[in-house]
Image (tube, rainbow, N blue to C red):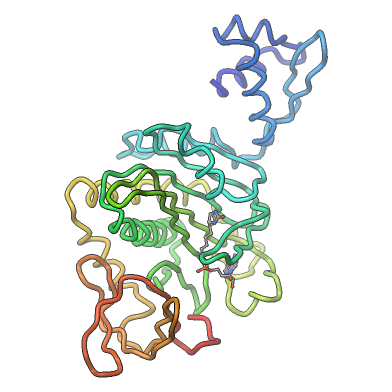
Length: 332
Ligand code: BT5
């Protein structure tokens, strides 16, 4: 609908189009038109509204916008409408929070939420995620998979591998995966993933996978400047097409998601995660909620769980937690 409104405004050029005219043209109520116009403004369209005259489009947003993202997804050769709705914001608190807010209203649709800036980006465990305007890809997938809640963390691995592969394909840059959810470039964090789940004991209501990828930051806030990096590695003259990365990310994610949700296999994902791991074959600090232990990271099992050799020289399988390779204060 919003695309049709934009087309109508473009056709009308310098002339104003009234709410009534738009409503007749598109067969929806004036209130619906008003709501779509409001959302278009949030997406960066400059639309003038004048009482008794109507609406006039003054300026389109930059190339990074909801329609451009939808168009890019449709260009995927293998794309089968995996994403049924794209929501784009020039600025928002957190795409994960927005995804949760709309979860019940979107029924069974898979949605992609993208923002050019987040003012309250979230990391795990209440941490914050720096998401400056125009500098990265800040997106969330809202999904309603029919899988057991305890398997939800596997989708985080799928997202990590899909993003690592997308980055590699579009920019040629190889990143490493720090178990379970970070992408690393030159020993620093270039991407983080936050998966949030709303479920009953054996039923997922919805799942939100938030991915933050630093693309072209010049400088990070001081507190993270030692451990964060962007794909352009601080070089302002390197241009990286965020749309193309999103397009490839969704393409890979859809492929692996279907392999897992429909056929129960994660083989290709785990094989990529193993060969691109920043964690395996190293002594690591394993950080769980109440303790930190030094263990040896031996392998990933068929579901991407971390197999470690513990202090008693016994093999142990770890489902969740964080690892630090260099030490408690080091980053990777
Ligand atoms: C994560 O948390 O790595 C998950 C980040 C998820 C961000 C996405 S963006 C789209 C979606 N909407 C959201 O609101 N969130 C998701 P964690 O492992 O807890 O790492 C957080 C820590 O990384 C912080 O405490 C900082 O030390 C560091 N950090 C913050 N911003 C960073 C950045 N842009 N790049 C690298 N490190 C960062």
